[in-house]
Image 1 (cartoon, rainbow, N blue to C red):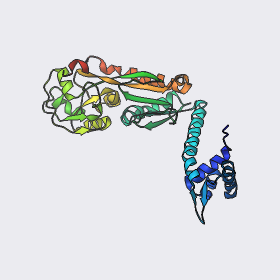
Image 2 (image 1 turned 30 degrees about the vertical axis):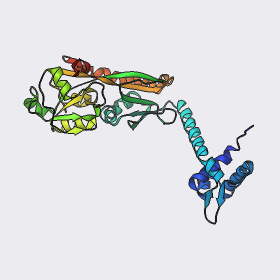
Image 3 (image 1 turned 90 degrees about the vertical axis):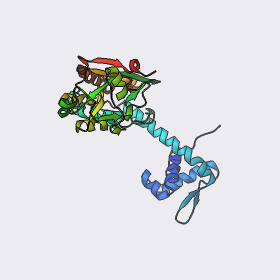
Image 4 (image 1 turned 90 degrees about the horizontal axis):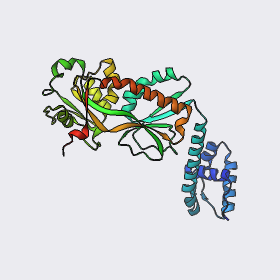
Amino acid sequence: MDRLPSLIALRAFEAAARHMSFAKAAEELFVTPAALSYQIKSLETDLGQPLFHRLNRAVTLTEAGRALAPGASDGFATLLSAWRNTRRLTDNSVLTVTAGPAFTAKWLAPRMFDFAQAHPEIELRFSASLRIVDFHHDEVDVAIRFGLGNDKKVYSNPLIKEWMTPMMAPELVDEFGADLSGATLIHDDSIGFFKTPCDWAAWGRAAQVDLDTSHGPWFSQADHALDAAMSGAGVVLGRVSLATRALETGRLVAPFKVGLIADARFRFICPEGTETRPQVKAFEAWVQKEIAASSKFEEGRTLIHSQDVAVT
């Protein structure tokens, strides 16, 4: 029957194999080089063959060492991740949230102070990223993601109904607030993955106006497109979810009454069962409250789903 050797000895080997130095490994593990060497020798005795070639001023892995090193490294990385995740379950004072760069910059960051005022007992940490979250390995409690959904084996709750409408700096309203034929159109390429287009052409069909969409700057990030519009560079088909604060403060205005509803939306995602943790529950409730307050921008507008104006 297979029996694992001492984890202390395996840890000594993993560190030495990673550093290719007994001295550096001993320093990392806060032991003497002699103690570390003793642990590795005991491991070699259990195995019945050497793991390192001990040279004058260096060490190299033997064939056995090369076979053991990757598994030892992965094993301790998995243990460390599991330990951190388990410890985080007992800590209700810190909440780590990941969201895309645009949502972090335009929605979360401007509201950090509001959340801190409402929940001084919770330390909120942000990680701006678009990559897929692995809750088992990433040190993240909550993910806010934008897309078409299809989240599996997680708690996933829809958040914001995403819709867009032309937005511009206040000084451009007199010039383009009723007619966009002469305006510079700013394009947001971050929404190119939608099943049905939510671009200027689609909005033109919804509003029943002819637009020349062949000109204007293109941006790969939605927040950059909004920043360009705020600077007066042109008119953007802005996503209201990201532009709420700019609309509230008057840095952007949305004079047109037609909005285009996207088939993608933001979702609040966390591991199943953790949605009831105090800080997760408090954060979700706060996000929902903030979103409800922004529904005022829908008043008096005609919102048309992109599917209803899609070219077939």
